[in-house]
Length: 234
Image (cartoon, helix red, strand yellow):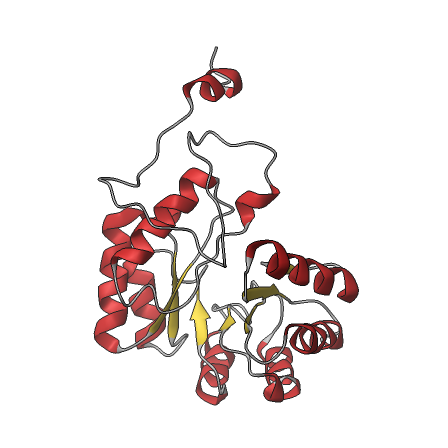
């Protein structure tokens, strides 16, 4: 996950992710004004990372539909894969016009926090791809959303709620369990920014991958000493 820093700093961070962890897929946080700031960023990242890196945008509803359409036009030659929440889904008419005209899938995230909202956004044309977050909907609801998306032939991304390693391994476990949720790389980098974690066996990213557990559950446990250290109900 990249963005909201000067262009060269973001490019350097992306190259560091690639060199250190083998990561070749990046969600770029955008939504700044003027839109040329983020167009410049995306172009610089494509040039630095080359044609094989998977790049997609997440505006977190930061633009209106007109601005988002300008970005789609300006980045048409940069081979972007998805555009998540380009504008507020509450802007019903313009959001649906944007989805209809977009050359790449528009992903519902904040606008689809559960199965009912996901179905509404898809069926009414507010999006044509979905982000699933196990920290948000748990395994049961997430599987319902995934089955719905698979039945309609919609792309799915496994998302992140600024999860700890405990949350991230849950995403890995769920995403790897189904072919339809493992087609694209998941969002896993937020835990790298945390100073510590409660997980007993820290996760490792090697060659762009976190290995899925092969034991019951999510394959990890809480470090009881750290839990005692950090708990606030004493």
